[in-house]
Image (cartoon, rainbow over all chains, first blue to last red; front, side):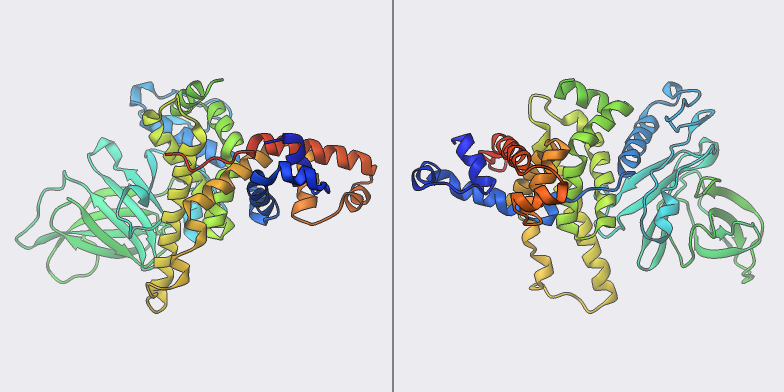
Length: 237
Length: 182
């Protein structure tokens, strides 16, 4: 391609017949480029803060992936990853997005749990686009995954160290309010393996998952016999 | 920094490498996401997820290959997955969408389309700001050189020379717009 002629053609300069003939084979390609140069989509600019959001998100995921001993003991300016013992907190990217997902991805201050952002790309295609996986406290095996859906909060609990309950007892999961004064019952189950729970409340309003052992006496109130308490959001959210 | 070095440091979570990769491709990823999702807010999410997915896949990236096609594949897949989720979400609230619904067969999903747009957006991002502005005023806003000179309060000759430099640069970058890489 004759670059000089092509540049003049693309730039809208009039060409004589001889010059046009020289460009014959390239005109279609140049016309296609011109169409895209005139398309608003070719000039889309992301918001200025998206760069920092991406950096924080990826850097945070990288810190989480490292062995606990390799994580930095203290975060320097801009690293945004304060450590608390072996449970490093990942500052999640903040984005201007709909409703509660903003809070799920809010930047974190120091906290006790490690938070990993996952996406539905790695999971069931019917799962919502953004979810949070929270490790259980005290190094217990398992995790809690919270995801927003059209039907409400979908909470996957995997707590394999909860022994199976039968004979008049069961586990009850609750969401506890920010002020600790209110409980919302979200489901009962026999073991902690792959439990799916649903809640019709906002996680910002009820940010703590608790599990109690309940007798099958028909009393809807909590027994207070807690076997698991999992903060779903960092304290600063 | 070579592509292999950038990817290696990116994989380690090196802030400067992540930033470098974003500065090279962030605009392009975002533009493709907007094209497919038709929503800037969703495109922001998709852009973040694209770089996160790229980080996860970085170990398997062949450093001898060009980063662009690899990242384009990830960006496109992330955006299309987001589009499908949004369509399912809307379908759950409304009557079920017909399989023949045009929304399910957007031209925007065509890989040739997205790759071509990727290359053009990437080329625009490599222009100096003053040249990019003139190209934008010419092609997007449809101004003549004289009108641009008036708007920017500069001589027409300056506009023409910048326009020529910009378009020559674009031709060099895009002169043989690549077929979709394998």
